[in-house]
Length: 251
Ligand SMILES: Nc1ncnc2c1ncn2[C@@H]1O[C@H](COP(=O)(O)OP(=O)(O)OP(=O)(O)O)[C@@H](O)[C@H]1O
Image 1 (cartoon, rainbow, N blue to C red):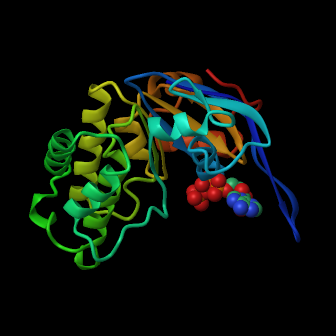
Image 2 (image 1 turned 180 degrees about the vertical axis):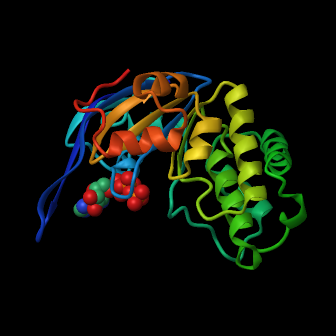
């Protein structure tokens, strides 16, 4: 469970002055739900996910992750999340299996449970073929699968994924999407950001459209269609971004 309550974030840039990256953003994501953040470049998606992951503090507002407050209970939040960011780094000389054993050792996981978990993740993400090849010899998609596996090794309750399929071919994307669906079925709470509208459409239970730091609309695809009179996510997105909605409102 994830509760975002009136979160704002202001950056101070020497040249541009104050930048309102997030403006009073609120929503909740339930257990077993996939929630998508869809927005153009600079909308504030990464900033919001970084605050959820305790990498950054909000200027105002609160976030609870799995019952822990991001500002006052950061350790509890970190134990509860798997955070995939654009700059998740791996050791080049380790293989995927060694990477998973290494990061798994940071958590209090019995050895046999860790080995079972590694085996299950290798299968789910279709990694067996390259599991013993060092990271520097892996393709982009293989590295991304390893990064996702590394973030999930402690079986977190909440997944925070910043553009998990960015730049990947459709086969690799499909494996990752199937993995996300499988984790939803296992009761995980999942939030992810994407630029890919069709992905948001097919994967998410609910979608929030974020623009210039504010959520202009949030709801299921059916609710967004009903609110706009549009039939697909691309048209819905453009309708809101072009200001067709008039006042902002959230479902
Ligand atoms: N550390 C920072 N200092 C100053 N401004 C920042 C910083 N991080 C982000 N911003 C600004 O905050 C706004 C939101 O950026 P953010 O990276 O959250 O957007 P995004 O929706 O993830 O974009 P993209 O889809 O391009 O990754 C942008 O105007 C960005 O320039």
